[in-house]
Length: 219
Image 1: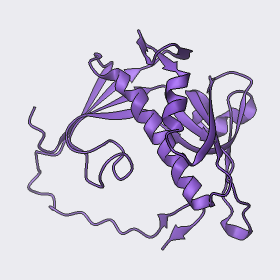
Image 2: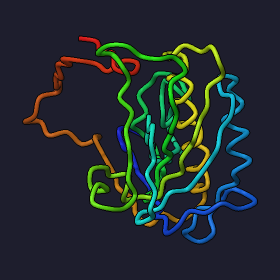
Image 3: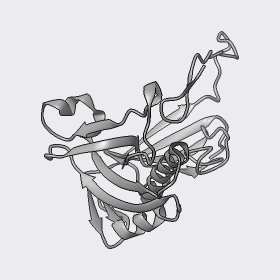
Image 4: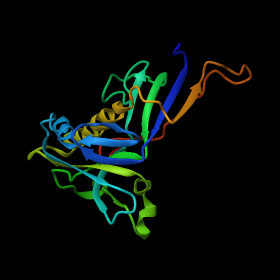
């Protein structure tokens, strides 16, 4: 396939997620090697420990200290990484083929190593998997692989925030690789190679604010 300005998004719809002896797909069940992913996370020396748990919709579970939630995706064909700037160079990657696992997220849960003061304190989230408050988070509708992370003593919050984000992205990328060679359930195509001559060639988006580390914003 000529890449051009065409992106194919391949979707594998998961029916279940469970732990097992090796990471892979068993039909439409994602099997996760807990020890493999724990070792992947702990390659980053900024973590003292990592624990992995699974939380499913309808379970009597409350997930606290939620810092990030990532859908597993991987670039199969085309330039760059599906998470540019973190797992690859900072480049545009909207061409080629990307695969995603539908029905789950990688959810990072942790407390920052240093106390916060004032208005810039980090706002941690809570996800209830059942009950009347479950409707407040879309994460209650999918299976969550929860990464319960603990920082090494002495880290500053900004450095640890970077470690948490990268850990979630690395795990999401690893899990999505089980889709390689698997027939997708759905393929969505985004093709920008055909242009309407009546439309302008340039669109301008004016950014008012950018989100930085924790609660910091850049105007």
